Amino acid sequence: MKTKKLHKDKVNIITLGCSKNMVDSEVLSGQLLANDFDVVHENSKLDHNIVIVNTCGFIDKAKEESVNTILDQVALKKKGKLDKVYVTGCLSERYKQNLEEEIPEVDAYFGTMELPGLLAVLNADYKSELVGERLLSTPSHYAYLKISEGCNRTCSFCAIPLMRGEHRSKPIEELLIEAEKLVKSGVKEIMLIAQELTYYGLDLYKKRTLPELLKKLAAIDGLEWIRLHYAYPSKFPLEIIDVMKEEPKICNYLDIPLQHASDNMLKAMKRQITKQEMKDLVKEIRSRIPGICLRTTLIAGFPGETRDDVEELKEFLEDMQFDRVGIFTYSHEEDTSAYALEDLLSAEEKEARAQEIIEFQQEISLVKNQEKIGQTLRVIVDKKEAGRYIGRTEFDSVEVDNEVIILSDKALKPGQFVNVKISKAYDYDLEGDIV
Image (cartoon, rainbow, N blue to C red; front, side, top):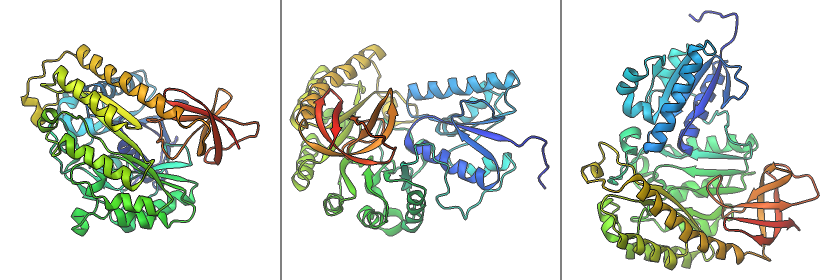
């Protein structure tokens, strides 16, 4: 039996790490709302009495940020500004015992799969009948749709399977319900996320079912853009590209993390692919959809990486001409197979190599942007900032990619689509007038 309080609890959810964590926080908020809680994301008003920190445990920097955030909330609790502090997410999944010993002031720690337990400690019921009820932490015109959890890949550097478990697909029916609810709430763009998109359906349907899911999502009235994130390159199912070509709602954009280009590094990383196979894949994708935007992610400073490996990676980037490139420095993670390798490079050297790659790609990005001058592109308006409207093309995802500065005398609304004639190009951004 639940007891009544004089003041209703208000829960603030702080989310760290990736978009998959963001979706978890939104699902948590939906459960709390269904239990009649007041819930906010990243509350700046500080008028809440309970905090839940959804942590990231992916690499050293993320772990440090998570620990510092927990300590900040504990300090507020000690000052009497908070009643309760709870911690969930990847860091808590991976280091629960250590955290309980080192920061005992936290009221309770929960892993990535312990949502019912977290709700129970708040005197809330886990409502299994909820599908897609989420309080969005993003602007109302776009949202992430997590189509699966966990990962079956065995990349030597990656701790995700330790924190998220094996690959588990969500049924197509549930995803369609969730997507339809998002669209009814005003969402125009849905970004499909998973640790490994191309594996989708293998566990439930005994075959890769992403193409089928994409076709059904594209049939939803009111949904304008569907964007694909995190597609593993090894044994990449090209049927995905064929569906992208057939369905105009699917952005001609693919996030396909490659991590490196040196065969020595790819083998040490256990990526199950060679440089030549990656080249062949990129060329095949571009032959099927000329003009597709390809984003990739790389790792600098993996154990054993030589100067020759770095130069080989730069040559690969010059040859492949990727539209978008992100880069991480290698983080030596215990319980991964790469942990047995000697991590000899200093943090400074890893950062220097990452910066070298960034600057190399920056020149490629500028040339590609300059080629867009004079073109008219369809742009979604994201926000107004410093008196200017900011948006994105179908070739740009949120936060990680380029933006378009929209020059307009008319008032524009977030989520509105406009045609913009590009007049200026910068390293990473474009500028133009509405036509």
